[in-house]
Image 1 (tube, rainbow, N blue to C red):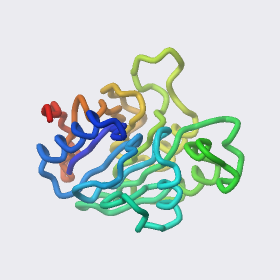
Image 2 (image 1 turned 135 degrees about the vertical axis):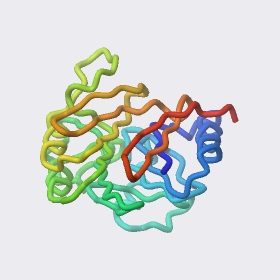
Image 3 (image 1 turned 90 degrees about the vertical axis):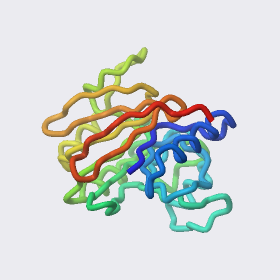
Length: 213
């Protein structure tokens, strides 16, 4: 199974790197951790929305309009789960903004649609039997270098409630690892640097240099 960090594939160089990763991995299915921004993909790719997306497309996918123009093989996880290769994989789309968290999702407009809200958190916490959790915002304790304190209480709460074996994190463009309770947490490097493969039997995550395109 192919696993991809942030792509920012609206940029032509980044898009070439994204497709180089797909070609090199030669996988049948992929997971992607947000900031994808390009949705015409070569294999089924289950992704979470990040804070940089085409939010009209994301809104269409949230509402089941899967035949949106320019969308091929892109499947949004937004407080939902999917069964892949014997794994139950759940994803939370968006990042946290305290000013937006208590608002109903239909009230979010424009770029504010990038955030998750209270109802999204409640929805994902109702899921059961999750093996792998995909989030764009990190839980506390992930050792990435930023000029602010990394970690969101709401993500901590999801990890605690779902107790997945593996939590994969996007957003920070750095590879980093920690453990939260019994959950291994891994922040992913961006696609233009590295892609990953996940063994569904052992949950071993292996990094590979993305070849030049």
